[in-house]
Image (cartoon, rainbow, N blue to C red; front, side, top):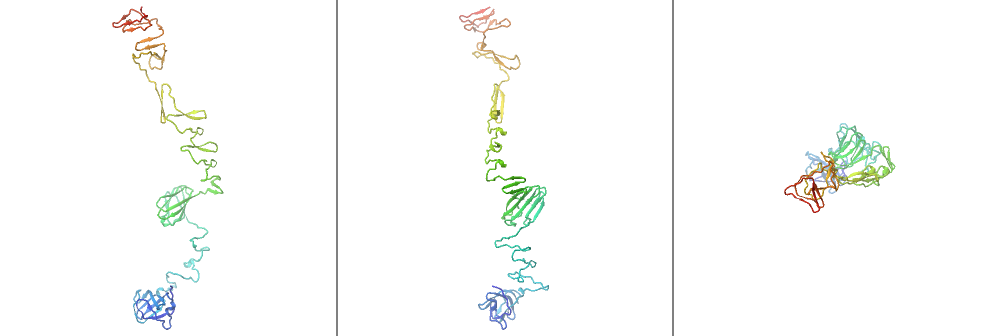
Length: 468
């Protein structure tokens, strides 16, 4: 259905009411509405000589009729259809004031509505007239167009940079912030990312830390996202805009003095050309260990000029060669194999040794003095001892020999012979208690001798008691 306008189109109608009007044929000297075409619309005027109506009507060959589709104005001052009485009325095509385009007093066109289709002087509408100037993307100063896959081809994109001097503060970014953020200065600085709901997935920011401090990146809720050390650079990609914090994917860049070559990695002036990472063990010749497993609690040490192992550190590497001990054990140098041997102390005479957890207690078992008792119950021969001192502390005790004995129960003192160095042997003048001369022995005493009452002296058969 199209809107068309034709010159000198007029018919009559005798329709009553406010509905569609039935057309009765062209007035002499005019065309019929048939030129409008079935189902097309046109601007119309209806008047019965007193009332009038202007609007947009839809023509139908059935009838034929003109539907009063949209009323633009009428003699009643509103946009409702007027009521026809059924008398003869005129219906004709008109150019309505409401839809007309005219030059104003300054020869300018009055404001236009939406142009659904049109051609600008038969050519492209230029930029100076509010157009694009192009129908395809080519050449300088042209408009970038997307293809059917929503892709655009171009040589390069130069993105804006914002440089900030670090001040131990927080730089808050928004959707309008520059793609590249450069930090300079000597202090640490925090960058807060924009509200992710104001961005689109794939939005990206790059951070270049040219300061000597730490650059910290947080999301819109101040949650940690990334840290960029001095001299480093990082680029962030937004992968989800479902929350203000968003989901950010971060990737760090290699510093400028780290370069890739053909099968080699340049670290400043050093070159790695023969290493395999995550595909094999890095050997000692390339600064690795050559190992993929280690002993729990063990040490890493060299077993030759080109190999390392993990385990208990041996003596040759400055260790002990041992991994377990018992309480009180010591490590003793052993010239056999130049090793350390675990050993415990052995107690000597008069010494006690008590091992502990990380300690050794050593004590003397010799008492500090000698206890003297009156022994009258022992019936067997004892051996008298002699001390090395006559006063003070006793430093030693010596047993004479088995030739000198003493029996406490009888008081018998037995020696092979008695030598009186002063020329006298002294005995008591009184036998105070009963006494039996041992069988096979004689007794000698210097008299006179008195035997106390109740006491007796028993002389065995064949023995004698001589009193001089």
